[in-house]
Image 1 (cartoon, rainbow, N blue to C red):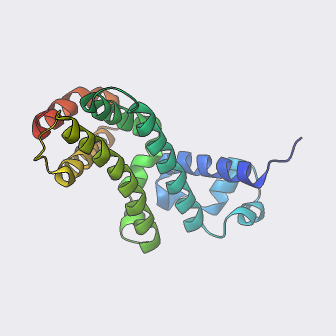
Image 2 (cartoon, one colour):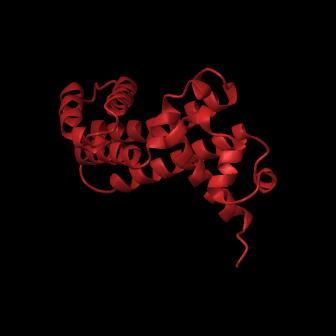
Length: 195
């Protein structure tokens, strides 16, 4: 059996934690459960991360790196309107396929119990917001969107619509696909920003 590199093992741990968070929430994730899920000992787990918070932080980083990559990939080419719509669909599809991300977004442990995780989530969410703001700026510069569009508010509205859809989806026990709501959400957003 080939031994995994430190980077490979860390990725494996982060992927396992995202699955555990989806199943149990952040508070249900323990170092023992993580070790069991990955198939290593707790001692081996501590060789890669010094604490549960360290692992959760790495999981937030990895999830948001993947989300930003998905948004950037979805918004390559086309009009600003098409890029914004594609980003919205990709955003909802990303969270639907990774329900652990939704649990991170709404976790008390992140928002209220850990200033370090709260700061990390805010910073990573800011990168996503920056991507959406840039797409909106492209639209205002090409004339697809009004030059007077308040990009900051339109970005906040985008984030709010995504978060609201994720919350509704979670409350409905994820029975209907999250991405299925993208048409209605897009129509509302399109109207709000004057596309």
